[in-house]
Length: 226
Image (tube, rainbow, N blue to C red; front, side, top):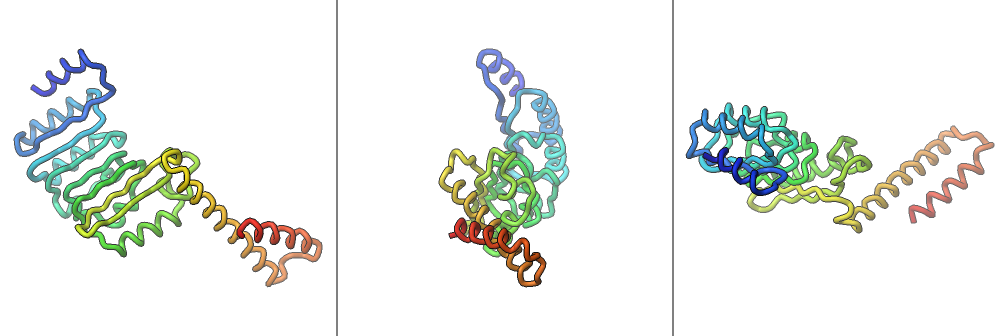
């Protein structure tokens, strides 16, 4: 009995959490549900489901119950019409079958450190749109909102087999990349400020008494941008 074994092991070994692996083709649905309820009351940190196919109803129940603070790996077939609001909110997300996932699903990513979708319908145009969304949006995952997040560097790719991977890392792990991104963001901000000054000048919104201050700020910005 796996639950009893886990209790005996953890009584001897100190472990912060347990990674549970369910073999879907060897367990009845009611057994999976019963074990899931039991393991969720234990020191769990990751759930993996393997082998065979999983129904929408069972996968929906799993995502309803598994907290979005835990890692989730669904290494089996998933119906192509599956949808769930929590599907991309776990810190680690791995789906072997992800042709059901859309660009909007990627845009719903929150708190994730690692996402791997082994089979998708994404193309490079989708990747380009996702990149633009990451750059221009101020939500939690996005590049402009780094002050309150530990994982601030995003690396993602789509290979020729339509496998998509998104990996979030810390600034400490990638200090050069993070410094370059900060410099680029600062440069963009200064360029926007300079454009605002020039536009105001073109439509004569700046009074004569502010010419000196305006020109001084323009020179400062131009020097920083260079």
